Length: 265
Image 1 (cartoon, rainbow, N blue to C red):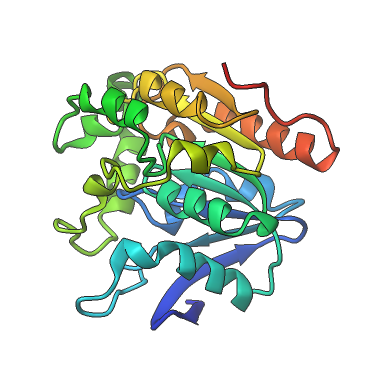
Image 2 (image 1 turned 45 degrees about the horizontal axis):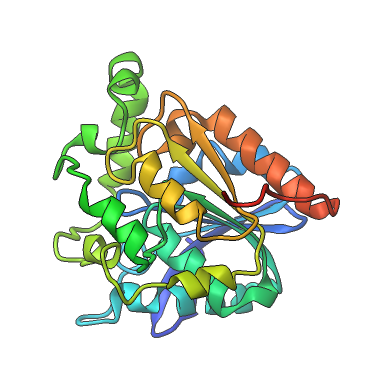
């Protein structure tokens, strides 16, 4: 099990393939295994880096440690450890706290940003207002997967739950509050975001519905918004072919110098 001495802990990571680096940052209900439908696809011509956030999977945090407050610096030190100067960043839900924060703090190291099913902890009032009208289930698999997916794919639903079960208990991790924090990245911060950005939202997402992600999209100049049908809060898991096509074309557009996204409305 590869681990790197990062910021006072042993951070679990995996690296597959060679080429331009892609970092995949999992959500609160996942870990590095969440990306099993992406890594084999992109590792043929990219270096795919997955990891467990501190406090998740095999990356144990220290007692009374900084928790999510260290996510951005953890990623920076992991890339330093792996001698990766620049990378594409792909986030799902909680991973958006890490990837948006990193893209703002280290624009010169961010080739492109994929925000999947996440606001990235944005503190702008328009996003928080849209989020305040959301009433998602507090727990249960129907919080993250669409009803159709659960009914039609019981084996994959079971796998999703098994992946989640590999994490230590995180009942008091404070992550949910991080998405309702007015001190998160502001409209001005997002207006200065340099990385080409695509936002991907599951049409049936109950946690960050499309109208919430659309509010974020309007704050990021040049960003692109894609709504994925028949997906809820885990578009990468529920509709991997659609998700992979979107991010693959996004990466290719950046690498060939084409415009990565349409102007925000």
